[in-house]
Length: 136
Image 1 (cartoon, rainbow, N blue to C red):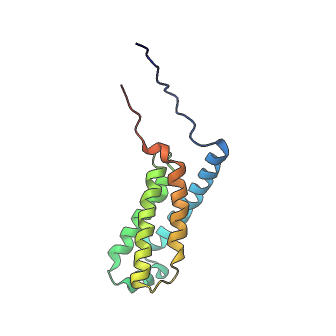
Image 2: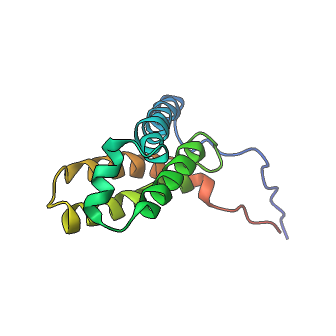
Image 3: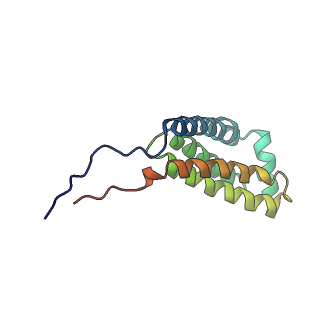
């Protein structure tokens, strides 16, 4: 019976160049979601309230969206949470796409899809953090 030793060092999943590109994208997305997207909603800036008033569901949806975006922005900067945060923000963007067509007549319909594509790239590139190593 032969025994194989399991390596405790993590395998390199992406190249060094790809890792740097992913970090750059994650930082840009975190800045976008934390500063440009979540902050105006958290302070109820008129640019955010107009959109959510058109939806007609009250301010709670605006504040919920801002909290989810802020949590996702922070998660994108934490190595073990980056893939999960990206997937969560993809969900927020898909919800935004539905609301765009249902309540806003499709105005700026491409924005959530483009953001979801970038987030999907992060989730795919960081997918190795979603698995739990097997122990014997």
